[in-house]
Length: 268
Image 1: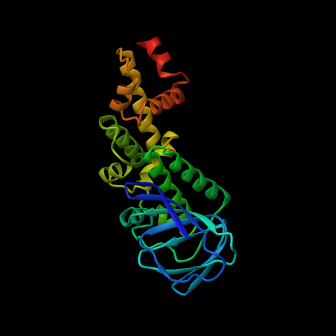
Image 2: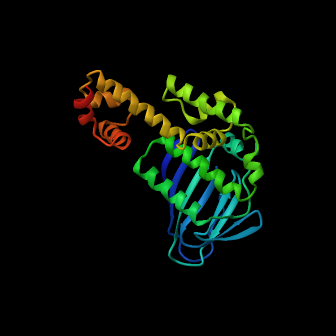
């Protein structure tokens, strides 16, 4: 009846592709939520009952879950439904939601932009894109959805001055220059700011995400090794932190417009 396929579990963030084949009719048993999650409906229509609140959900709406909530799902149609579940651990959610991890009990409207963003995020997770990039995108998507409920709450704690924001950006660059593997959550903890705000400030200042900056540093490290005469691309990929040689080649071509082999001949 319910098929849940987890496509990301990284640094307190989970993404799951959820397919329900429940026949038309009332849900048989209440289900207890076990995580904090934001659930986007991709296809279908169903009614969710929780805490005495009834909500009809379709692809124009999302709903939130909090651990321990008893929920029942009724299905007015027989065609089932598909959803994307985005879960966050309590501390990460609290850092986004003004220090309080309890999510809203009412459905959230999903504008076309948010709908496209969550579908792109799911597709990227299914492809196996960088966990760092997916985590950063998931946090940003959650914040965007919650801003529709209470923008001030999401923005509380945001660095107020240009100087403070620049210090955060420089702090990220300095930390990643020393260790490219440091995660968004680790960087945020070191710089004493929420992961959401750190990601947003960095993107606004540089035009790209922290994960993208990390990938660009890896690409520069590859270029330096090629210039030094490195011949073994598979070993180079492993040393620099790429998934494999194919991943290295895709990134280098994206960054430079040419293949690693061409660069090896040109600068080696």
